Image (tube, rainbow, N blue to C red; front, side, top):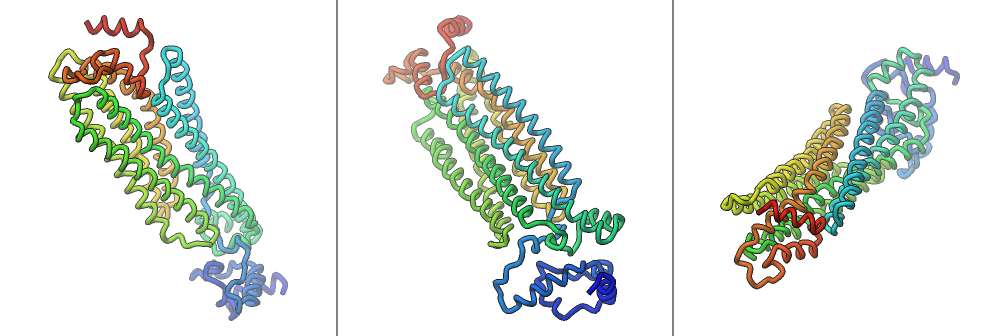
Length: 434
C-alpha cells in the first residue's frame, strides 16, 4: 500500500477490525476527526504485530510503544527547570564556600569538638546531596528535551510545521514514542535518571529532621549537664522524645523513601502499579511533619524553662537562648517549606508547570535551613554553655566535675559540645562578667 492509498484509506475512516485488538496504552482513538485522520502509516506494523501475538498475553512490545507525547515535559518547562537548577547550584556552592571559610576561621581560634564536627558534616552532606540532585535534574531535563525533539521532528515531517507547532503547544497526541522514532534506550535513560533525582530529594527529606533532631539533642544535653535545670524524670521524658521517637521516625522515613524510589522505577518500566505511590508519599510527609513539630515543641519547652529560670537573676544574659530559639524556629520554617513544595507537586497532574513551584520551594527551603545553621553555631555551642556555666546551681555538691566553672567546662568538652578558645579568652570572659 503506497502513501496516497494510505491517506485515502485513513481519511475514509474505514478502520480495520483488527484495530480493536490494539491495547489502550498503545492506541487511543480520539473523538476529534483531525486526530483520527492523523495516524501514520507505521500503525500497520503495530497492528500486524499485535494481531500476530493476539493469542499470547505475554507478547513483548518495544518499551517506547507505551509512551506518548503527553508523558513528557514541554520544552518551556524543561528549559525553565534547567535555569532554576543552575541558579540554585550556584547559590549552594556559595553557601558551601561560606561553610568552608567559617570552618577555616574557627579552627584558627579553637579546636572543633565532636558534636560541632557532626553538625558541620551533616550540613555539608545536605548541601552536597542537594547539588547532586540538581545536577541529576538538569540531566533529566536535557534527556527529556531530546525525546520531545524527536516527536517535533516527526510531526513536522508528517503534518508540516504549522500543524506540528499546534501539537507541540498542546502536548497531546496519540502517536507513540515508537512511531515517532524515539528509541527505548532514551526513555530508559530518562527514568533511570529520574529515579536518582527522586532518591536525592527524599534523602534530604530524611537529613533535614535528622539535623533538627541533633540540634535539639545538643541543646538538651547542654542543659542537662548544668544540673538542677530538670528533674531526672523530666530529662528522661524529653530525651525519649528526642532520641528514641525521633530516631525511629527517621529510620521509618528512610525506608519509605526507598520504597517510593523503587516504586517509581518499577512503575515507569511497567513492572509494578504506581497506584500506591501517592499514599506512600502521604504517609512519608505526615511522619516528616510530625517529627519536625515534635522536635520543635520539645526544644522550645526546654528553652523557655531555662529562660524563666534565668529571668529570676538579672545578672544573666538571655540573649544566647533567645538567639537559639529564634534560629531553631527558622530551621523549622525552612524544614516545613519542604511540605509546601510537596503539596504543590500534588497538582502536577492538573497543571504540569506546578513542577516549577515545587523546584523553587524545595531549593528555597534548603537554602533557608542551611543558611541559619552558621549563625546558630555560636549561641548553641558557646553562648548557652557560658550562661549555663554561670547559672550552675548551688544544689550541685556531689558532682565534683560541676562544682566549679572549670569543672563544667571540662564536662562540656568531654561531651563534645564546647571547647574554650584559650586561657586568655576565658580570663577576659571572667573579667567582663565581674
